[in-house]
Image 1 (spheres, rainbow, N blue to C red):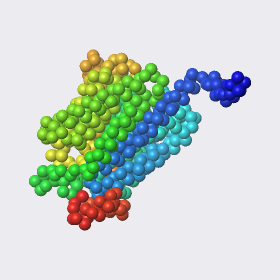
Image 2: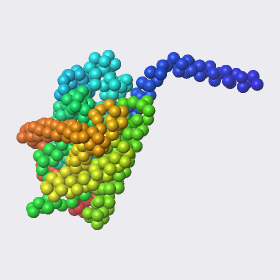
Image 3: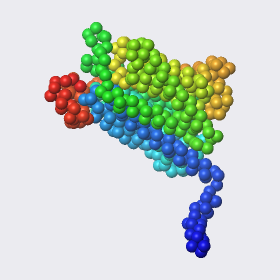
Length: 460
């Protein structure tokens, strides 16, 4: 009996400091802690999407470029992190004017800087360091999307130059317009997690790169008909899409910037998931009808297109509408991908179809399907056309899409055009034929397989 009492006493003694600490924590402090942990977890999920992009892009391109394609993901996220910390975050979320921020550069991570420089982020009490990491993850995703248009033929120095300028001159300006208190924010544009801010921006830069770099060697015949250049590993592509799908649960629900919100982030997770499911199924069925075979890459693109589309609308629409938005995104992306290729555009991973066209559709869809209750809950914009809101919200969405697309298109053409006439954008024909793994890095991502292929005279 005495032994049991001693054990109980010791246990209480060990727990006492914890019990005392818990008693001293106020409900407000507890909410900040819970919200902070949630947003940090969401940031980690979005950063981990870089792994998904690496696998998807490597699997969708040829073996001789696999190491380069995967490795540059690490390089460019590092470049993005430094540039966004120094300048991009301030331009995007710092106090300033309707077009860009003018405060908050070289983020210190201290709350006194948050109070002085970031009025647009005051709705959430999450520490500024966590907010920065979360927004950095978004900038990194937008840049990763842009690289799809550079795949298999761009010089390595281009990733340094354009990566820095995209992160400090292009991406944060549009982010400020919509999320940082800029002119589109004032108009009430609904883009909850970035169909336009993240995806359309990256896709537009990818489109410009695709146009300026020209098609890969062997992609088109003399009569302009396209040749299939299949990716070397569909399994990697599938795994990449699964990682991206999971990462989107940080992307969209994390944009609530809090977990203590009556389950709102859970509802956003639901609409996100249902849209993705509908997009993948719809795209596979359409490809089956079109090709006579169920095309796996088309299904993967359908999932991603649906996720891109619901990114703007996830907080504003009913679940049934999320399914409709996702299915339409999967179908439209399939047909636009076929059309762009027939028109002579060599977009190796269909970046503009998946992230651009779907981003446009997703942004416009809130102008159709946004409900009065959810719009009020998010405190952004108003009801869509199908819910009695008339054409006002749809007009605001269309204006935002046009403004962002035009801005990124022009600046990307200027930046990449200057690079093209100075150091050049594209590797030499010989370097492209042997592959960027060897020409840019001196070793293959698959050295044994490439050695065997070379001995057999095979093309990879």
